Length: 580
Image 1 (cartoon, rainbow, N blue to C red):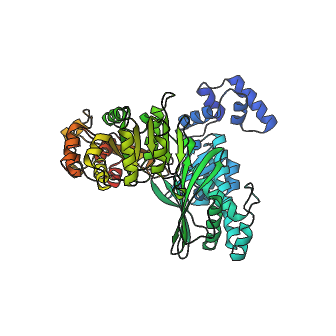
Image 2: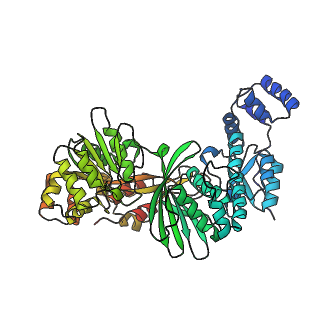
Image 3: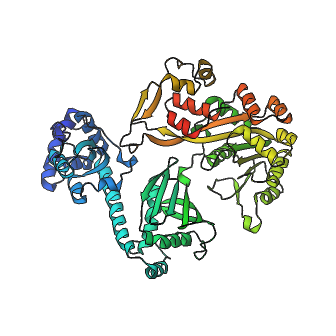
């Protein structure tokens, strides 16, 4: 039996708009007259008359009826949730279900006064209906995207069920040309996998074969989730299609391969880095999405703490030396380096980069794609750079002793060198260079600063709530008056600590998180640090010394953001380790 739906107060739209001073009585009369002639909705007619906008109508209804407003243009509707209501009913009533939690179904409506529609949905689904209001154009677009994507997927799955070895050859014989509705099911499926990922703001696509199923997962905000499960028998065809798109050898299934796909999605130029890996049950494919439009190259937008930001800016302003950015894959190192280069990019300086691959193209910067298979390694590119009169050099990664030695020599002959290393924190980077065979005095005379970083998920602003943690939690993070002073948070009382979390809402898909930001650890090469390294100090010694000289660790940077309500303590624990 259906639960009673949420019912807004019955009011006429015209009366509401007049009461809020958005239209006059004369304009309402004119609109009603046009409505009788055309049969259109009153709101649509008022928008056509240009006396109000769709947003005006929606926001005043939201305020007058105490029904929440949602901006669907910034919201991704899950086709599986949309499927709870038949497409023809959703289109007839101009509504779309956007979320389901327990026995509550949230429905975005153009007309939240439509009691009959609310009753129909409650009866049809057996759920309690909660309404939110959205603009007509946003609802129409969401209907097209949600039901269109679902119907496309249903059609594709039906087509793919019958794909066998013989039909696979037939599908793969016609992969060239434009993608369209009449293309082979495999082509359309691969196109849909990529386009949905790009539209959802996904960073990586994982296509994973298992014994009895083929799983496709998306990584969003650093966390993987299941996206779809195509038929297992379509595995070989999907793999071959993506390898052809990436210009890889479809006959080679025993060795890993790397390639690149360049496509346009919604008029956005997208690059995909493709990696294939043979597993027990077939080739696993991972595609990293590189979106030029999503690149942030403003240092101020990266989430630095004030003191850390000043240290980093001071470091990249020096005329020569090495700046190292460290962290695991996917920690935002490339974005930080590109932001630094954009800050330094001026007509009077010659900037050259050696990358593998070149992820984004930056105007005014000479970027070189390294090709180890033909001998164009980082080391080879660096040697050539030194004959090209550079001022600033970026090396994608220092992977071996040869590259490290050339980078250090370049930094000691008047060049500023920026590069990355894969280490867990800033002090470990020094130990890594020494392990590569670089002498301690070479490290101390060339390295200017080392920055370690990670990405943490940020709390959804629409459902953020505060709570008081237990004393054990506060003590576990070492939050004291001294730490609050070091974190530059004098306004926070250590006896009245508050943390924050997201309750979960429509905007964040009930996850409580929306987006990511960086946490940073910047270690400067001071005179005391040089002496510590030359005396053979351990990474723990270097870390303790750096902290006494004002360095914030990754854990402290994360705790600061948790105290300010930017992230949660769960993210602090997930991403960072306790300080030594």
